[in-house]
Length: 510
Image (cartoon, rainbow, N blue to C red; front, side, top):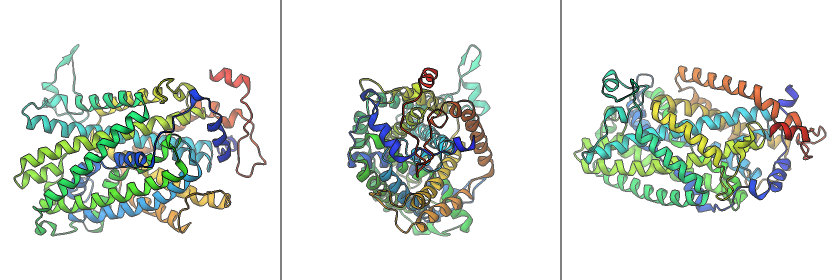
């Protein structure tokens, strides 16, 4: 059993499977370098810059306050992500196949490890999307209130954190009070409909939103800089190094998404050249914007006042600029819409590849005949995210999302070291510098960030891994390629033979 679940699938075998896929089973290669950069920035620059910076600066019951040193926290996370970006870039150039880290893990550590990686990617993107949808709803309702038509509390509150007063004011259906974040549900539904239409249409909308949100963020930085009071930067690090670490563990959420670029490898025109460039440019641009926003935000208002759902808007209201606060709310809605699109693009493509490897039921790998999109998984995930956005609370999903991402980053860094040792002659269009020191730096940086996560989040994460292992035991282990396709024991890279799947196996899967 152990030999089966840890048997790797060779890189050449993966490439042959993609090249042999029929036209009806293939994704459309239409994304250029600019599209990939826009998708990366669309995924990264969103609710993190508009929400987590204030939370990290102000601190909370479970996390020490970073204060103005949240600027340092951003740098710490950027360094950790830079190590990981180099590792992702090398693997993306070597294995330009949809699925991202899941595919890399299958080629390095085998089927079970790849399944666990897929579960972490799903956790990261799904909860990330839920968190973004909830934040989107908060800013959207702020705009409605500014226009004098704000929604009632029961329509913009998660049932998990609703107060008795909210429950009492909620309408009833068959005697059951209904408390649901309606704007969050609505925006997820709309983005899902857009993504079923096609990657080209989704990318065009995303490109426009990314340009618009960068313009808005630059305008916010320029406008806010005039109201910076250096006195607000004292004390600079009220929580000391513990505050900087806690702040880094929170704002790590702000950087989740650069790895998303790797999941659309099969829709990129030149994945071996463009994927690595897109990830590096995404990290550089987002880090610069984050550092400037953090400096302006903590300079405009005392850090203790920024622990709100809309810290940027709060800072402008505190300096007597309510119209600017409304403008920021509009900008946040635009930014987070782009994030929703990016995350909703990434998730189905991971499920699509996992199903293609038979670790999930085959209907998840269906491609729409007209739009050439993995429409079944797009709709299914849209439903799951809709439920989460309507009923879960923001704090819990952000913390758990971060843990899933940290696990993915650690394993990807380790995979670069293993593949360099196992297949040193493998063609690598992009090479991570200073191996093994850069991957080791990524691993240690992620461990440092993980130490700042509250203990109860790790309990939730452990439950998730146990559930995923049970799913693999009852379905994936029985249907995966490692069970039904003959393994070539002589292949140096542990490659699975490319012979046809036995007829009885095909019948069983159908």
